Length: 258
Image (cartoon, rainbow, N blue to C red; front, side):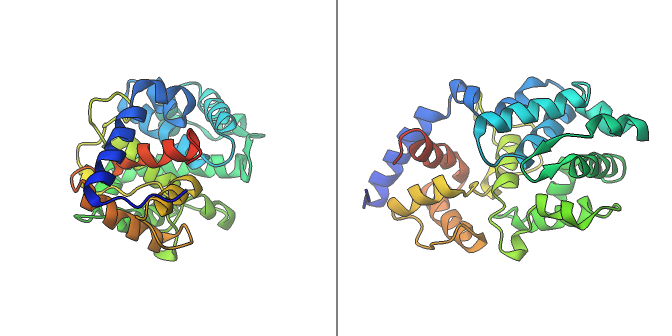
């Protein structure tokens, strides 16, 4: 099915779908429920970052394994990151989600400790490198900062780099969770130092296919160039909050098989 709509009709159609899916019951089946478990900002952002990192594959498995990660950190991610001793990391041994294993998990905890201890936390690192209309350079800078600690090369694949052509779907999703604040109750809007206008759509197989059927994406691969193309189109529909349309594209693809 392909829909060729004029700009006005396309905006009306997508806005209707945003309204349909951007509501609290969306949380029940989505990994965004993990940061919603916490009231302390740092707990929510660390839990959200870890949940987003493993957000590929079966959604139920993603949620279960993200809950397991939080449990292994004593249900207090920020305290664990900041105050863990070497022997506490042994509790993470055996964790695995697809290709993300306990070695990666331990490295992530150590990298997060470095970010909170020496760089002012996750929000500060992304905010420092944001551009007016893109956070993709900030993601690249974040990866560099994240891996300034000693680490095995294998763990680097779990943080995307847009400069190497990645659409960085999982980090863009995490940034949507943290930055968007529209009072709909889904995205958390914890980060005030970054504008929603600079966000990019989490581009995956579902949102990509729907965008192509709607005529707002022509590139075949779901890569950084496709993301830039989709970003441009979504900003034409709403320059101040382009990523609200992720709810429409995702909902149409996953729940409606559009």
